[in-house]
Image (tube, rainbow, N blue to C red; front, side, top):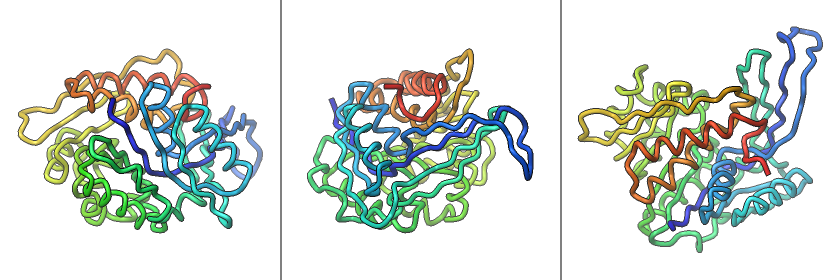
Length: 297
């Protein structure tokens, strides 16, 4: 079994689910719950519960939230390598879910945005292992040097590398050209349709995937209710699979991270792309059946 090393963000998600349309300037009844979050930590958690040997390196605050997030990762079975920041709090993301199910995220990365190259344990890099880098670690200026150091170390030790594109809004602020340059050498890029459009200017996922293979050997685009596609340069057509039906979507937070964790093991085992896509869609569907971005403990 290939060991997966995940480098990225660790957050606390405060999920506020509004019961009615938002009352501007007044109160709206809502349920507010706290959960472990952070794209990188989410991917590591889903991988661990799927039985994958996974390590996660990141940065947390010295607060209670940081200790709780650390213990959660260990509870999932993740080899957690967290550096404690004495000054910055553990990152927090306020996830506002409207009465219709639409989501808006307000993120304060806290300690995650201060990840340093020296925070990354050298023993995590070894031939035959796989590195998955959270795109947020590149998008946050404070952790960008650590992310680029991580990519360099993985390439030096002949590890395979996958990256996700983080989030469309900060990706747009950073710019397509710098992001494409920083991520050179990745074997596999995960994006959703909005992120793919930011990087390529193409609205159609198939067209965006074709453009992106000029930078990455393989591309996976998550298309929400339309499923997902995989494309490799030189193939006549992308391979697509439909989304797995979910009778009732409780919370879509973290579904994209669960997809990555479902796809990677099958892909690393050399399974056909359609099988890896189906595994990703299956785990994404499981994530949408409960509140929070992590597996239910």
